[in-house]
Length: 278
Length: 290
Image (tube, rainbow over all chains, first blue to last red; front, top):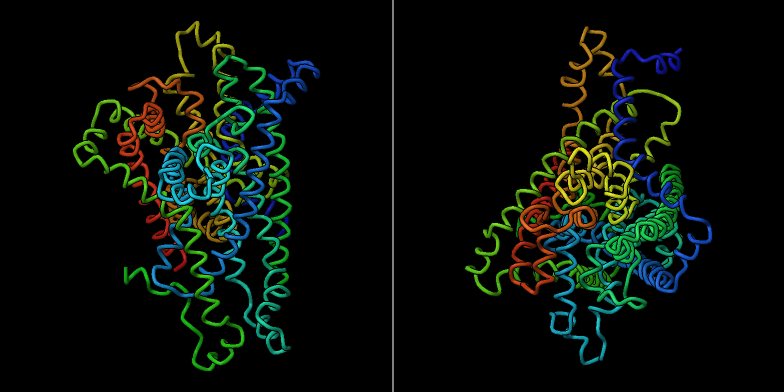
């Protein structure tokens, strides 16, 4: 009986709310997105593959996906460290640091872009330190990596932090009682528990990085074949009125994004199950 | 500073737990090293760039700074940024409440698919978000000729900027409200209905007061993104000075013209907005958890 009641709810407004939701979703998101796929369908298969496998395009994939993967990996390590320090230790200014971790979410990407370019160029505060080593950061692929590391950081910290907070102290105490050292306890008890959340954070940071535009273009140098990311190539094609070419690239990026979205949903489901079991 | 330095952790376990703590805590030097490493990383990637925005903005002096943020093109950019946010945030707020009401308070088939679709704009590159509106409303697009015949302009005009902003901020309110309203269940609303409340009364008097902090949280994040969006509006704007430039686009133009002090001055306004957003967010989070 209770099940039936839930289905035939006494609450009003279901039709109106769902109808409005579906209408608005279709108008703003689904119909415009379908335009990308329909536009690409007007290309022949040969024209499409030629478009999305041109040498300049392939070079942009290598940079976009390679730098995004590296940046997400850096974020996984640094993000776990930051989350651990914020959950486990006390130090002056901790609340301020905790709030500022979200800066990459809140700071407009164009602002982040010009600030990173200024700081990491050869006469910038940090870029200057690398001149004696003969390493240039801004206006090289390394600059792309710096920008993508910047924007991805909060994803890992904010997915790992709640899991660390929920960790039962009894588990670690049991490990200590049984003779495990701290490092052993971390590797065998703590790490396996946070792993699903860590992978989710990694995937979120990676997904964000491959589509990122604003923070990258100012620091990248944007040289074709060298430091040109795929989203920039889409804009370049668009500015040359090559709508079909721009859209074909967009479809490739969209398909990768959707695959990642599916993966992230699976990872989140796994995280929830782990947390429920813990 | 002292107030901020207070420990945010729940109170330490009672004295008896102290001894156990030692077995499950790292030695002091490890703790210090880890804190140092984490802060060093955050400093090089977050704090230094943030400080650089304000340093570069004020480097040429306060007069240059003041002139840069009060020149007509800058003011026009601020106005357009405020306009885009003033339209897109309320639209997505209404959508968020409607979607959360349907999803959290009722059972129906395909609900999980709907929730995933609502999150979709977050996984679409901002550049592609702009592109799809060009494909629909641009001169070569589906509605291009119809719009031209009626002398309407969407792309390279204000409506396009608003549409792109609506797209990129689409999920913010909904994704805050859905889990919150699901967790709260339907008992209070059902009691209100039994006591004779009408539909809108239930929403205004029962549901919304219960979720007001989550709602505010979503609106703050939505607004920050709406005012700061760059990639999507860049594609649809056409960069017409004083007409279709938002503040982030204004920053880009000045920067590409090597007017660094002016570019960073405009950027500092957006950085301040980000800091206010973070402060409000932290404040709401604390109200939320109590």
